[in-house]
Amino acid sequence: MTSLEQEFIQKIKKHKGIIFKISKMYMSEKDDQDDLFQEITYQIWKAYPSFKGQSEFSTWLYRIALNTAIIFLKTDKRRSFIANEDLSNYVISQEDYDYGKEERLAEMYKAIHELNPIDKAFIFYYLEDFSGKQIAEEIGISEGNVRVKMNRAKNKLKDILNQHRINNH
Image 1 (cartoon, rainbow, N blue to C red):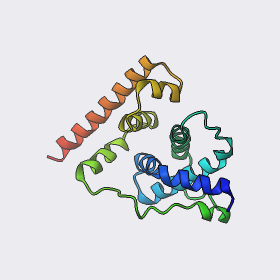
Image 2: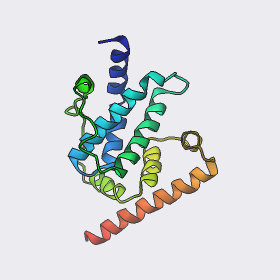
Image 3: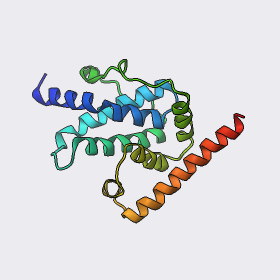
Image 4: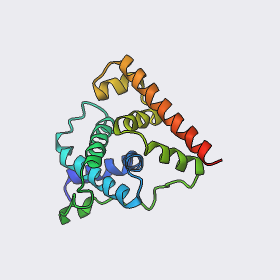
């Protein structure tokens, strides 16, 4: 294994929680989450040689992961995205990731699945504690526009959660 491959695997292992969260936010079924996780990992690997360190690795990873998730949602090729045995070295085990059994977390993810892909991205940034400035830089819009879109996404999520609570009582 080359030093580039070793470096890549270390970085992915360090930041795999980000990939799991995005996979879980964008896909409701476990198999689809696993597929998206692998697709994101593959896309990051393909782009890794172009990573120049001009931003934090995690920031760069967020951008690729979110873009991959949005594109993945739009394709019907969810299960046929990878058929390359050379990638077997880059498969990351999910056994040590805690998917969480808490009922509230499950409710939140269920509600997040009802959001459109862009609102999901804003909620993800919010849950990851990104500042308005960081989000603006990531997405390429003004901080004011970020605040407006973030508030709309949070309000949509609150409305969905409230609707779920009303329907479950």
